[in-house]
Amino acid sequence: MIEKITEFYKMEFYDSYVIIEANANIVVNSAIAEKTIQTIVDQFNGKKFVLISNRISNYTLKLDAYSPGILKKVKGIAIVSKNEEVRKKAILEQEKFNSSFAFFQNLDDAKHWAENFFVSY
Image (tube, rainbow, N blue to C red; front, side):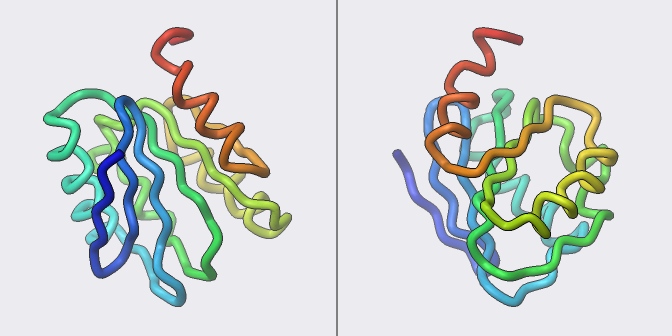
């Protein structure tokens, strides 16, 4: 596992997926999303990957962060949270993403999904 910390996110890189945790009280717009995804793409050397968003902090994600150009290398997204409000917001996010999208209540289930993603798809 490789860890990177930016001004907006903590990232943990594994073979085919990354776990990201946003810093508290930030607003993630398309510019921040693009910068973050570029950091991830660079780490994966252009390979396809799954993104796990572990939503433990309170922050705002603007729907323009789901611009198709920004997320073209992302083959799946997993949202992890036990908070029902986060789940409701994730439903709106799901409509903006054209690939696999899943919601989990715990990180271990999301990791298992990500580890098996490229085997199944």
